[in-house]
Image 1: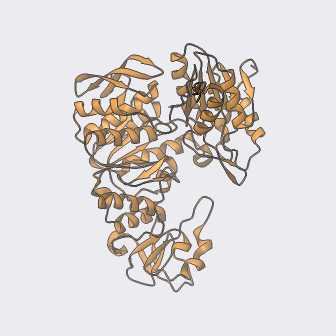
Image 2 (image 1 turned 60 degrees about the horizontal axis):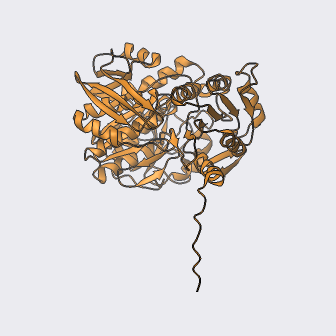
Image 3 (image 1 turned 120 degrees about the vertical axis):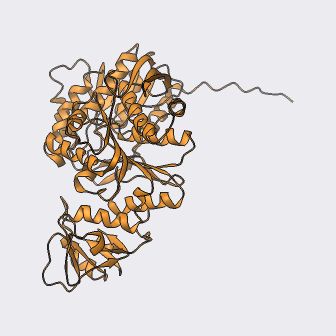
Length: 504
């Protein structure tokens, strides 16, 4: 959404933030709130956020030169003539201000928040699909796209900044959308980026290792994820994956102010499923819901996707959908871009593109495909540069589930791709029988598709829906799905039909 988009309300900071102190005024009334100095203007509040990489105090003079109404700070800044509102936590207060300026839209919508190391996008899309199949309009904010229920834009962050988030929710209310499904990343939760919004329901899909470059420890990562529970209104739903140890830890910490429901493939879960049949074209299962069982079919494959379905079922049941509506919605749902997305050009083997970029996600994906593939599983994968280095050898170990693992580049960013590959290989042991190194990603995909035989399955992992590769400071157009189609069509395009030549 355009950063210049205006809010619809004016907000008294004294009323909204009663614990705040003020310097240079007794109150501030603002009509806008920004965190970038270049967006400051008369009537706006400039939030002076001390980021992990950038401290907004460096841009104070630029912001002040644009005549904002005042500053939001965590301590008074001396020798400034501009009014200041002093709060304990600038990020969460800024989020509250943005939500209030947008008319508190999250309180006028039935809003579901989804967090977890893996499965956020699929679960959020499932929630939207089940609701829309039942005749309701639902907006989505997440890794792939932002949608207000009518208009859609490509996403820039999994969870938007506070201002953008509030504006999208406000737009949902204005367009008559009743529901919102929002992915909440660990970064966003830790930073209080969405602290101002209220959730009717929250889903915790799973908690395994990711983003340790930011959170440093698993306990800190777990605490960040658990913050989603503080956003759920009293009486709202918290749905947790009973099959996941990390989610179970949060389950044990929950108090009595929320409705807490578990889901999983174990019969002990409140909402559970039993797989009856599965193949590379879909899964048939028996859903246990409200003490009754329902036979379901889905185009999604793998146990992890069944968990995502159950998380969506928990939310949509809480939102009032009937079991019949839920079952029908599950059967209509097709796929999420870049999440085990099949690429079919008539080749005699299967090819999938998936976003799996953690060892847990890659392990689950490969294990699911391995169980359903009569031939070999061939996996192409890498690891992102300038990100958590500790997960690179773990990705290598996870890839050993495949019959052939081709190690390549993901988004190397500023790092040397060969160094990233070496760190991945460190986790793969001494075996060289089924490990191939090809730093060029297109060449790696081409190699996998050339060696695949009838009955094999090729998994191209790590980038999913992404349409570019980041090498150094360059963003190069690169879509795994498009590249795969191009290579397959070169080799497997149907023979041209002979044309009849009519003589005169």
